[in-house]
Amino acid sequence: MSSAINRLKTEYRENPSWVWLLFVLFLFPILPEYISPFILFAGYIVFKKHWSSLGNKALLGDIGKSIFVYTIFMVFSGIWSNTHIFSSLVGMLWMGCFLMYAYCANAINSVKKLKLAITIINISSGIIGIIAIVEFISFSISLLADNPALRFPNPLYFDINTAFFERLPFEVVYKRYSSRASATFDNPLILATYLIITTPFCAFGSIFFEHSKNRKISRTCWVFSLAGIVATTSRGAYIAIGLALIIILLSLTKNRNLFKKILPFIIIMAVAIPIGLVIRYKNSSTDFLSSNTNRFDVWTGCFSIITSNVKNAMIGVGAGTENIHTLLRDIYHIDRTHAHNLFLEILTEGGLIGTALFVWMFVLTAKELYNISKSSNKSFTKYSVLYISSLIGFLTMSLFEHTLQSPKELMCFFMLFGVIDATRRIANNEIQATPDVDTEYTFKYEQEEIKETVDIA
Image (cartoon, rainbow, N blue to C red; front, top):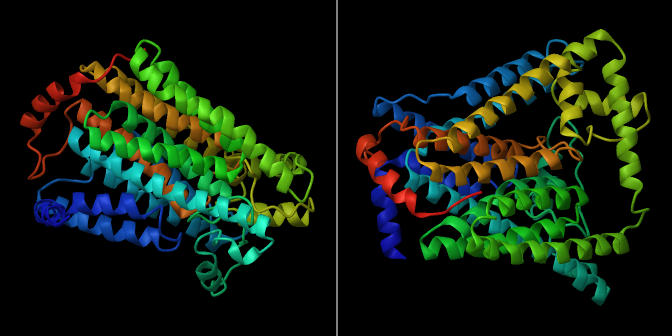
């Protein structure tokens, strides 16, 4: 342990921005929503100061530039929004969390760092999964003992959050969950969104990492992350993670050994998901399908808002959920805070113009993933499979939920794009040098190191 700490101290002296990034990747999912962004801001200040001292610049790729343009649009939407300050603040929150993209895309400048960053992401995901499992089990124990006092805090920071939110100048809809795990997030759906993005990273590490220690850590975290998703009892999350894992499974059809390694996890999920659905149905105080019916009402209401006038259709009602919440409640008598569908949320908030800017981000991302898969070293294809499975899972979850409503969701979202851009730069030898990375030597060495892994379909 002491040798690891000494090694970390030495690395911090050589490259403080990289060590800070590892802290950020590890801590932001674990800390409360209102603290995590400040950890990111502090880390980015260290990164920018160190990066500038090396004569480097925090460069934005095509994905980053498109995201930045969208955030500018969100800030300006405060002009025509009925809640001017709130909409502008939401845009600024996106800008702040966007730093996660810039940080990852630049500071991860070698295959070795990319693998370590993925391992850290996996460890955090596994810890979150453990907390979710404890919450879920404690609920079952409390039912058997008929003693609610035995329930583990769910969300974990509920009492602290309540004290914090009550002091804010605006209302935050917030409640305790008795049967569906939330872990360190504000509700089960936000937890599910995070785990859907990160669980493919755990699967990737457990399949492709050649070092036994990292592979074993990733495999353990994969089990806990999957169990965490089951503990949310979110039907949309079950579909999303199923599709994400199927993509990884199909990519391994030419490699029987790796196919056999992932197949047991698929079988476990196939058994666990129906059990989760039965438990949710059994413990539900309302009709099991009532939430689906309510979602259809919300979607119909949002569509009516969009088509009510030309202004809403073209530029939307403004960034943030406050306008949508008010209109749904006052006009359509639906007391829901958002559209429960990311794409409909984006369309309602930003109209056709905002939606076009948002979709353009994913078009450029598809182009980046294609470039990664077509790199001169074909073994980078496995990274593109990872990112595609994570994105497909996220987009599927987004059909049922507003998946970018909280700071930690945004940071996780931008982390994914940052890692994608970093991988593309490494694959094309477009990285910026740091004292621990010499571009020419590193590229030649890692091109040899990375050849060893797999044959992907």
